[in-house]
Amino acid sequence: MTDTLTPALREPRSEDHIPVPRDPKAPYRAGSWTAIIVVLVVLHLLAFSATDFHPAKLVTGAQGMVNFLAEAIPPDLSGEVLQKGLEGALTTLWIGLLGTTISVPFALLLAVLGARTTAPNAFVYQIARGILSFFRAVPDIVFALIFVTAVGLGPFAGVLALICHNTGVMGKLWSEAMEDIDPGPEQALRTAGASRWQVVANATIPTVLPQLTGLLLYRFDVNVRSSLVLGLVGAGGIGLLINKAIKTFQFDEMLTYLIIILVVIVAVDLASGWIRKRLQ
Image 1 (cartoon, rainbow, N blue to C red):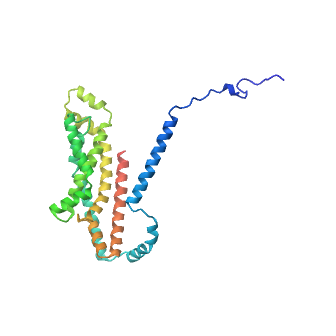
Image 2 (cartoon, rainbow, N blue to C red):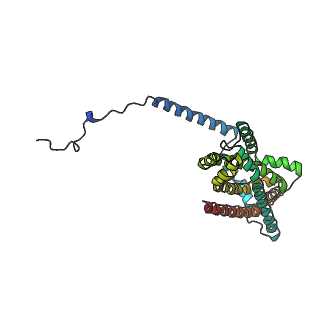
């Protein structure tokens, strides 16, 4: 019988297939991935050993956790505790606000000097980057301990700590945002004879302003949370109240303060998220 099928409908024969060439780097890739997996496993085993990571201890210590929760529940909702908690939460909020806003001019200056597209020269760029790296590398709680010894216990030390750390973090984020913008407006002003600072003021910052504002709101959100931790080392706010409650075994008061700060943080998160959406 004559084969009436068209060439397109014929069943392909083995000789019609083009052999796929072998990847000469395949064995190398497989060996590399094997080595990476082995190294990661070894590093995790060392980390488990160094940190005394034993999940079984959670089972043996479950009774202690139950006793702790039994003493904390129900929370102390007396008027005196609620008043102290609200005042401490407001102080924590003010610490986060001032630590964020006061750092803006320092972060903006270092961001301009630490961005490749706006730095006057390589030397200034490296100096600015070094300062940003230092402020970013030192944790805010370490700054708080330093300033507590300088200005004493209280929220002022927390504000100073956040100013230093937030300058480093926000300056780094802002400088990277400035490097990623469209260079067209900057080049147009330079061609027209504008100075470096005129280009920054009239092209760079206006172009990147929505992104800078969004990053600023995000950092405010983070700083409110950080100010809670700073209070644990004497930098004021509701963190200081939580620390005192734990040390005096008033776990029901501690739970009240945690609930209050949770409400404040959620409110700040929702407000900053709403503002960021309006800026997009």
